[in-house]
Image (cartoon, rainbow, N blue to C red; front, side, top):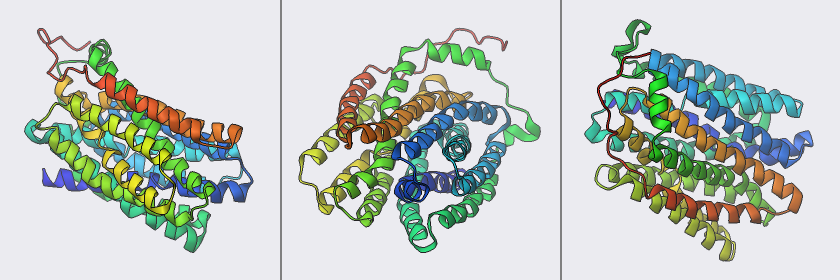
Length: 397
């Protein structure tokens, strides 16, 4: 168990930590290339959509052949995408590399794949807690990597900083060895009671699965809009770039605690109530942030509060999926839930750039984020967490 948690945590630290800093490149790249913010935002919107689409297939492959091969492929794609992001000279190439390629890379190196291993290798009595540990690692990665990325940009330049990250991300490969699963030796998957089609049919007919997907859509909308556009929002308001870097780092730092607490509470309390509280808390935090006078202090307070709520949805959501449907197809089902998250991410980051270019302000998107937070709180409350009732085990098709 210890090896799985350490290696999984390090992989998520690198993968999630690097991606959380992409907002720092918005202004350097758009100014250097003479592109609009919508161009940059659209590429990152495609990245999130690509992550969601490829995440489904990455989950299927990980469930069938084990996580190790998927993680190695994801690390190579990540390095290639970062290098391509640095060397792109047209919006099309930037969208292809920063969007499609990096999205596919993140699909193979983040939660759906890592949580599949945790779900299969960790005792159910500790599963939610273990997922909280892995999510906390991703948050620590944000706290660690965002300032590092800011330092690399200021010290090397935006292009050289991306090339340096392309080398760093290859460290995922040696950690992937720690997630080899004995049941997948020789490429053979363990015997299962359901085929992929049967598992999907069962999940998509189950209302609680649909409600979890709806809530996760909101999570993606909120966190990616804030993560990508808040640095530019603060700079537009006259605050220094360092304030944005420190704010993103604080989100990462406090999310270490938030995700760990959410994962631990998931072993004791109803996960649906935990999720509803998180989404309602986000709506309240954004409302107060917009209402209060803007200053570095108010930004840091907002970032700290949002940090507690940032990725704390991840452990209870994935633990609920495992609790309802079991772990045989967990990576795949987690990939489908995450696909909904990434549709929300696409909308959040793209609308942020689009509406800013149209109106000169981010206000409309902030208000949408508040309304969606209330909606997500309401749709999570009816979720049924008990294991799904099945008849005799069906024969695989």
